[in-house]
Amino acid sequence: MQDLSFEESLEQLEAIVNKLETGDVPLDDAIDEFTKAMQLVKVCNAKLNNAEEAIAKIVQDNDEIEDFNPIE
Image 1 (cartoon, rainbow, N blue to C red):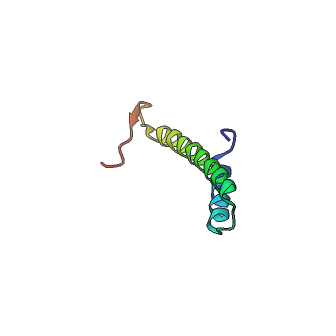
Image 2 (cartoon, helix red, strand yellow):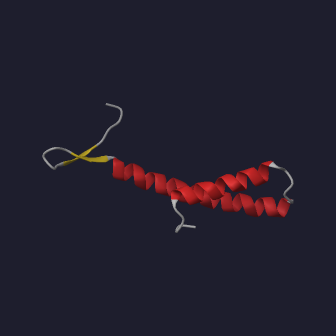
Image 3 (spheres, rainbow, N blue to C red):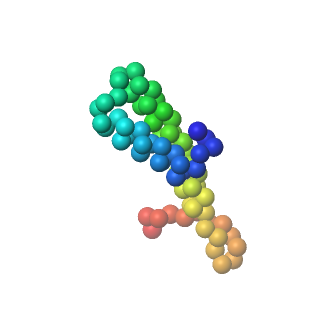
């Protein structure tokens, strides 16, 4: 699952949610799907955290790297 892009992971997660929302999934299958969904959530969260860390660094005009604080 780590090899999936964020978009692919999110797409699979949405498919699982839609499947589970139908209520037509046997309990054992629902548990398996829920487990897959939680793994996909972890993958998406890790990718978002990595993107946040990358965006948190901004190169200023003098080529120094400064932490970005969106609250300012």
